[in-house]
Image 1 (cartoon, rainbow, N blue to C red):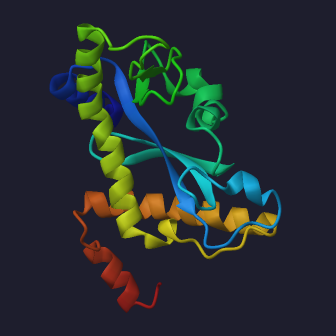
Image 2: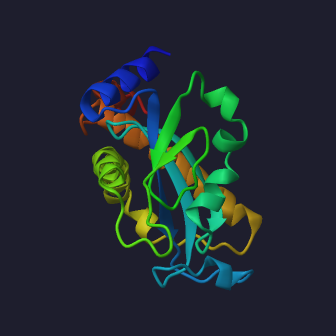
Length: 206
């Protein structure tokens, strides 16, 4: 819709990328305890047990898509390639639209990622370095978005919900979705609770 068009225009003007409709970044929900089943697969590079989460946001840190549930040891690219947005790309992307990510993601028609050095290559070419620098200034918006989300909802840094049943994962993913929705609402209202919510609270609607 019009929001998507406005985002494309802003990104084009400020960062020079045409047809870009978002930034993807992976993050982790840190688990307070080791899951009993397949516990080792939840052990991640940050030396803790965690769940992999993929977040797509716009240039203003609004979350447009969230996908979680893979064990923490899962590579970001694998999680992304199993997401609905990647698998049903034509529903989400039209006319050469794409999202941007870091070099952990592999290239595809809907993903533009940083160049990484090929084996045996000492340095990237000047053009590739320039491209990476431009891309990094946009990608940092994704890191910024995740930083705001995690500071606003500290449970993401230490989740006490046990993963010993299917319900545990369901509960975590529902909480994640709620946190992302609230994150977007707070951004719109610049961190103030919307005044009409107070009216609802006064009327006993919690």
